[in-house]
Image (cartoon, rainbow, N blue to C red; front, top):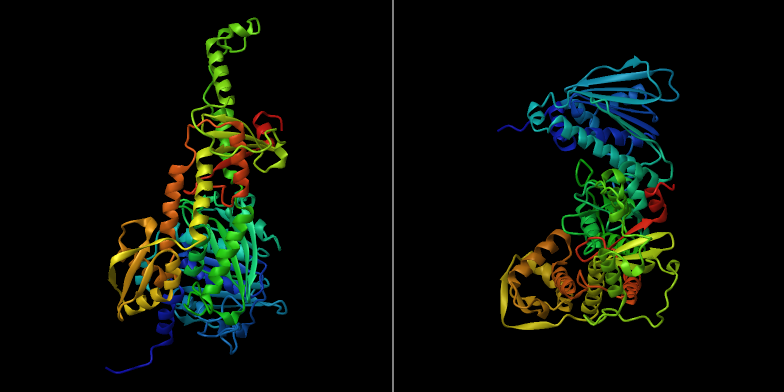
Length: 600
């Protein structure tokens, strides 16, 4: 078999398979070029989900006619000279335009600020047409038609027009968040337009444009640094969560990335605060010395490798947890919005017509002649307000029994208990409704978890050590974390080159599948370089015990008990949601209440 040099067109088509996977990949590369050119306005037009047409227009610096010829040649770029470790632009490989031109009909129209006229060049399936003069505004217009017409096999693997158009919209949203000073406009063949006006340095305003106004009201600002790494951005309160991870955005030196280390850290930071199957909403931006991160891992540049991944992971988890401890206990405004919708007159069931006999307020009757149903209500309130011998108080009674003004406390002062489950408290500017079982469940869980992790977990020795066969690499990783496991009650040691011996297991877990736990921990270490499975099992057990040991729904509480619960919630981090991630209280502002009654 004879070795021969491949043609330039075939080389570019091979590269296109890595760089240009779908229309959204082409859109991403072209938008990055526009941003690197200093554009402040970028317009993207599509047809057929980007398969038929993809046009990106910018007002950047533009290109001279001689540069157009180089722009469509492989590995020609103005963004990189000699040092691959000092990458400060979004693009740097010089592969996007020649790759697109080899599989589509590509045209570039550009003019610099100094030039009197523009120039245009076309590439069709790898065949280059000469540069010709053309009328053009300052900036560049890149038009891609019939993507993958030269490689029909790739065209067959594309998704529907709607799915491809949605992928392009996602690219534009990510770029819009990363560059709030740039105006983005996306128009499609369905005549819909997605526009993000520039917001300058107000990044939260741009994020609100993309994620919605609710995120602004439920976001916590993050700004932390460790050594040469800085983390900024916004994280949603735990009760403001979604059913998928589409509202999680990460950027490294302004570059949108899909990095599993960042997603793993984000998941760990919100552990035990969000229900299973729900995802936090967050926008994280990492600024790091380019020499400490490798963005040249994949041609698509969506993956990165950090020189010190443990530092980055620890910074993300620590910063988010600190922010949640500082401000994360407040209720999401979406809960109040749902409550407002439930109270709207048009959604309420029609009330029964009023008649004198149906009214509980009959002024011509004496108090002793009150209707039976009102007398029952009076008895119910009397029973509620009087100490009962049915059960002992769950909370210690405060030393001072006198009622405190509600403005002294964030969760206010208890005013009533509804349906023996919900506490209504008055705050300075509204009211709070607390789920007593969910709230106390979280308080008990935090107490148990603090006691659990403040000292070594009791371990039970196995009569016969269990030998678990693993690969040598898995054994190395497990033994390296042996001290960490020992604090959690799991005692392991090396047993030959390809096995570990389990000598102790956490006493709290009782009889368990030690081999299954070891294999799970080995998989976590290989995937995420951290083993949280054992800690999660212990926390889950503590959460289960807390659920069964907390104030039950249906238990009537005295006023001092309710106030004690509110004060304890205010002093406990994470009390805004229960162990299962559900909110423990909903806050309704006085302005919202006045709006319900038409007073605003």
